Every structure is written in structure tokens, then in C-alpha cells.
Length: 258
Length: 106
Image (cartoon, rainbow over all chains, first blue to last red; front, side, top):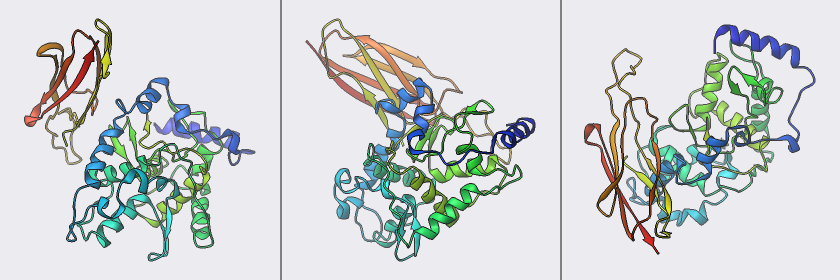
């Protein structure tokens, strides 16, 4: 996006901004509904969805022994198709030991370090994405079900605040695009409502699978804000808010997006 | 890091046109990109994809730089007889993957 386009867009936001607000449940749309027929076809067929390559890798990792304990994920959790069903729909979830919510990637990393005593997987590494995609794949078609209690409420509020806070050199809040102007165009691209229904997902632009945090970093760089590091608590708060905001929408992992 | 997914209908009528879909895991690095310090990233692509049907070549593709990563190659062939479709991807740095699928023709 050129500076000129950015300024024009920012100016148009100032004109259009007032009056818009949170999206009513009946008008919520997954990014899937806003993308082209061809891209939807890639996602719909497991034989053409490139995200399935990671899911298959994840299945192999799930059954492979790892770490000093020499146990595979499957040794404790059994068949992921039953034990992991619906899990991704509940994440980020509160971790009692850390006293904060953790996302699915962090949960897998914690399980590896604490139970398997295995060397940590880096964020956005192929193996971590593959395992996350495999676990999240088991929730495909299930509605997102984030339950907020008194422990997670402060984190949800922090995420909501971050979503509505103007930031970066362009001085834009997430909500200005994704609540107030979804369905309109930002340069050539359609602005989606930012529901994280299909992560980790295959983005054609990335030519690979990526996490929600990678996507959030893209957005932050786009508004010229300094992106948080992978795994930053600020990101998890925002992820919690986004997932809560998408409550009831169906998980699509591994989704495909332009 | 050398996975491939192939999709062939399990059964077909003799003479029927069947669609075959293949997906290979590959970064398809073009050889034109540079790192942040300016060094050229060496080319790493799939060069050739072939499909044989009971030993007869029915489909072949030469691939070039600037084709997408994890290339999806779909094509059609005529179901002539019960047998095996064998797929082979070959490329830079010794990349070689084979996959087979069987089809029952009635």
C-alpha cells in the first residue's frame, strides 16, 4: 500500500467512521464468505487444500515419541480425533500455573516442555504449525465456544481495549477497519471482519501455513505500529477477544485465504 | 518434508474421463529472491512431474521458477483398465517423491 492510498483511506475513514460499531451476530461473516469461488474451492476439498500437508505432518508428529520421557502425544491423549475434538474451539484458555490465558500453540509448547521434556519448538516453526493444525483440524465444523469467567475477564477486557485502541503511525484501530468498514476495499483487498475461524491457515500470499499471531503482526506492520513478539501476552489477550467475538462461528482449520 | 497428496477416483466406468488431483509439498524457491543481507537464495524447485498409468505415461509437466509453492496439479485421463497410477515429482537438490493410487475400472 502506498502512502497516498493509506492517507486516502485514513481520510475516508474519518468521513465514514461515526455511527458504526460492533457487528451484530446476524451480520457476522467468516473470511470464507468474502473470498472468491476459486479460493473457496481450494479450501473445501481436502485433496486440494494445501493446509492438509501440514495436518498430515502434524499427525505423524502426534504419534512420534519425543523428549527425555520418550512419549508421544498419542501416548497420553490417545486418538486425537476424539481427544482433541473441540479443543481448538476453546482456546485461548486460562492456564492456572501461568495465571493467564494461553493459546493453542503455547499449550502445545508447554506440554512438550513439561510432560515430554522435549526441546522447545519455536513459534511459527514447521513442526509447531503442523501439530497445531492437526489438533485444530479435529474441531473443524464445531462452533467456537470461548467461556469467560472472572479469571479471564480482565484479559478479555485488555484484548477488547487493544482492538479499539488507535495505534501506529497511521493511527488506526483494528475496529476502524474490521468493525466499521468490513466488506469495503483497502487498496485491492476486501476488508474481512477479522474472525479467527480457520487458524493456523494457508495464506496464498504467504505460500504457506501461518498462525493468527503472524496475521496480527502483518496487520500491525500495516498500520505501522511496532508488532509484538510471538507469544507476547498482549497478542494472546487480543486473540482471546477475537475468538470470543467469533463465538458460535464454525472452525474451518486448515482454512485457505488469499 | 516431502509429502504428496493424490486423489484418484477409486472406481470408474471403462472409457470414462476421470479427474486426478495431486498436491506436492515444496517451497518452490524461485532463485530470484534475496535475503535481507542481499545474498541470493538458491533456486529450489520441482522440475518435472509425471504420471504413468499401468506403465504408460499419460501426463507430464515441466515446472519453472515463479510457480506457486506446494503446486496443485490437476488433470484428467481416460479410465482404460484396472490398475495403478504412479506419480513422480523430481526437482532440484535431489528432490524426488513418488506416490501411487489404484483405480478399478468396470
